[in-house]
Image (cartoon, rainbow, N blue to C red; front, side, top):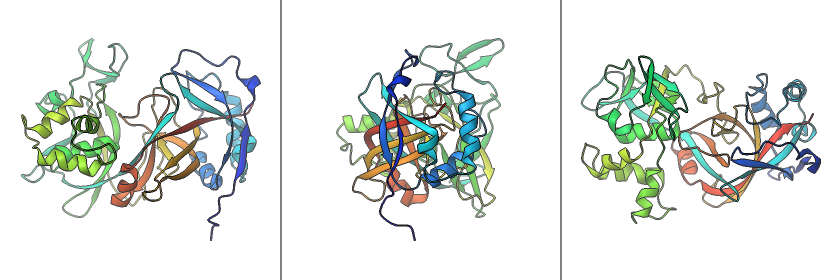
Length: 367
C-alpha cells in the first residue's frame, strides 16, 4: 500500500543565468523557479513516456531544444523517482495579464443518445465540416469557412442551430436529447453517449468554428441567479432546461451568447478505460491537462502548485507533475489549465468545483 505521506523530492533548481534570450512579446514570461514535488512522479513519468518520442512543435518556445528533449525521452525509459529532478528545469509561467494562473477541471460525462433521430433524441452532434479551415486571417477568430477560393468567418452557434451547416457536408454523428446535453459535451470536449442497444459511442474533440468562447455561467452569476461557488455545471444545465431550449426561449438565448461551437469525431467504445485527448493519447485522471494549443504544444510537462478541492469539497494541496495532452475552447491563455478528472458523475462533481488560482510551472529538459 502506498504511504499516505507524500514523498517530497526536489524537482530542480532554476538558474537565473538561463533567463537571457527568453522570447518576448508572446503573452507570458518564464521565471526560473525552485520547488518541490509530491509523491507520484513515477506515475507522471509513465504518462509523459506515452508521447515523448515526438518532439513538440513549439514555435513560440525557443527555450525548448529538440536535442535535449530527445535525450530526456531516451532517459525516461530507465525512469526513476527523481527523473524530473535530474532531467528538467522549472520555470514559472507569468501571464502578462494576470499575477498567477487559473485552474479548472473537466471530465467525460455519459449521456443518452441515438444513432438515428427520434422524438426523444433530436439534437444532432456534428462531425468536423470539410469546409472548416484553421486561420488567423480574421481578427479574434481562429477558423474560417472556405467557399471557393475565398475564406469567410465560420457561422456561430446560433447560425448553426438555425441550419447553417445544412449542405456543408458536416456529418451528423449521433443525436442527443437536447441542446443542454450537446453544450455539456462541447464544454467537456468529449463524452460517452449511451445508445439504446447498450453500446457506447465515444465523442472526441475534432475542431471548433473559431468563434470566441463566452462563459455563460458567468453571465448567470452577473445576473444574480447564483453565486460563483453555486454555479456548478449541473446547476447551469438545470437552468437551461428550466428556462427553455426552443428558439426565442431564455435557455436558448443564453446558449447563443456563446458563439463558439465544437465539432466531434465518434467511435464505438471497444473497451478503452479512458478517452483520448486531442493529442491522440489516452488521458490519465489528475495527470492529463488541457491547455491552449495556440500557446503550448502537446506533450509538454508542467507542474501545478495550488490548493484545490480535488479529493473532496475542502481545498487541499495539489502539487503534481502533469502533461499537456488535450485542449478545449474555453482554455485560453498561457496561465490556463483544465485538469482531467476521469469518467462519470463522481469525477464531474469534483471537476465542476474547480475554479481556483495557483502557480503553473513549465518543465523544460536540461541541455
